[in-house]
Image (cartoon, rainbow, N blue to C red; front, side, top):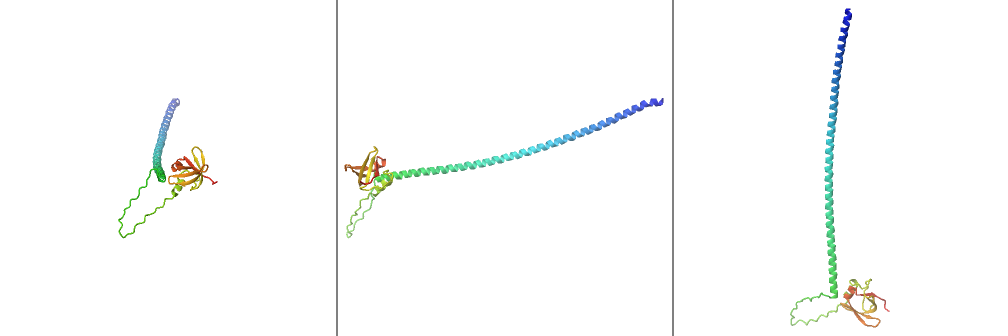
Amino acid sequence: MASTLLSPMVDYYNDEEELDSEDDDRSVRGRDSEEGTLQEYQKRMKKLDQQYKERLRNADLFLQLEKEQVERNHIKEKKAAVKEFDDKKVELKENLIAELEEKKKMIENEKLTMELTGDSMEVKPIMTRKLRRRPNDPVPIPDKRRKPAPDILYYFLLVYIRVDPSYALYHKSQAIYLESKENTKISCVISSVGTNEIWVRKTSDSTKMRIYLGQLQRGAFVIRRRSAA
């Protein structure tokens, strides 16, 4: 009977020990769980910190590269602008020189034309100082000046006057055709050449005509070579 009374007590104590053991196991697992969670958290924070630092480093590198690229572009554009400015300056200088040279040629041609045609330019005589002749000195013989040859007129006809597309050289007794703006064509022969005009004789009735150099220059008349009959 005593054994019967003791068995419930023994079972009670056994159950209580089992409960204490289970509580100990739960506390140990709880501590392990908390420690594992903390380690995982610390590991993730360390990884995020590394990623943050890596992004900062990449951002600094990208900013530095952008600055260098902007500086290179600035230097390149500055050099291009300087080169363009120098090219434009040289081009402008060359254009001005060409324009001045062209005007200089026009002025020289006009001057030569006026000298050859004698329109408005007069040659002033050179003032010379006459010395008093001594009694025993011989009487000076006057200088006989030759009449200027019409070679300058031929040169003028050859180069500066639109006489013939072939720019042939004309002379006295030359057989020519005299053409006018009215498309008339007259068979003539050069009878004489002066400093400002040229005389031609028609072969049809032997009448003479005077043609001024200004008329040839303006294109009122055109002289063309023809074969003598």
